[in-house]
Image (tube, rainbow, N blue to C red):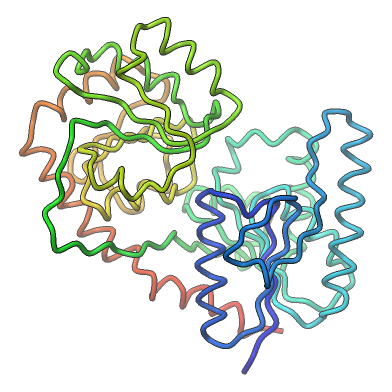
Length: 357
C-alpha cells in the first residue's frame, strides 16, 4: 500500500544524517511511496529538488527574542504543510528539529517518529532545548537513536516502549583493482569543537610521523577552520596537515592508510562505517558510543581517551609502524560491519514504522 511520508531535517546539505535521509528517500521512492523532504535551509540539494519542500527558515540569530520568533514561524509553516497531508508518516531528524516537529504535529493525525543522531547526554544544544526535549519527546509516537547509550539516556524521559535502536547502515564498495595507498591519516567531519580536530592535530605533531612522509588530511568545513589552520601554522605543519573542505570522501578512503575519529562525543558517525567498509584500520575515541556496537578495542579498532593528545599520538605511531596490526584491525572490523550494518536489514527496521496509523 502506498504511504505518505515526510522526512524533516533543518538542512539537506552534506553530513551523515543527511546521507541517511537521502538513502531512506531513495529506498521508499523506489518502493512506490509518496515521499517528500522538508527542510529549513535556503540551499537546495539538486538530487531531490522535485521532492523537496523548502521552507527557507533557518534560524541563525543569536538574539534570544529573534530566535524565538524565528522558531515560532518555523512551527507555523511546518504545521501548514503537514496539516494538509494528515495520516502521513513523519520522520524528523536531529534534536532541535524533532522538538519543532512535535509541536507542529499537536492535534494532527500523523504518525510521528523522531530520530536522535548524536549523543543527547553530551550534545550541546542549549539549556532551553534540553528542557524542551525532556518535556516533549514523550509525545512523539516513536523515538529512534543510533546508539544504545542514547536509547538508555532517552529512557529517563520517554516511555521505554517508544524507544527503538536503529543502527546506521552502509553500502559496500566493490573494487576489482588493488587500491594504491599513500601515507595518509584521514579525518572527516565538520570543523567544530565536537570533532576534536585540535587534539588530532596536536597528536599528529607529537607523533612526528610527518618526518617519514605521512600527512594528515581533514575533509570538512566549519566554525573552527581559522583556529585550526592557525594551530597548524604555529606547529609548522602547513604542508603536512591538509584541509580539503567538503569533498567526496570516496577517493580519500581509497588512497588513505588509516582513519582517525577524534570526536569528543558522537552517535554513530557514517564516516567511520564508510572507512571500515573500505578496509581502513581505525583509531577512535572512547566517547564514540555508537561505534561500540560494531567495534571492540584492540580487536577491530584502537580506542583512545577523549582529549588525550599524547595517548592518541602513541596509537598513531603504533599503527603506522605495524602493517600486520593494520590488516588485523581492518579485517576484523570489516567482518563486523558487513554483518551489523547491512542496509537491507536496517531498512526493514525503518519499514516497521510504516505499518502504523
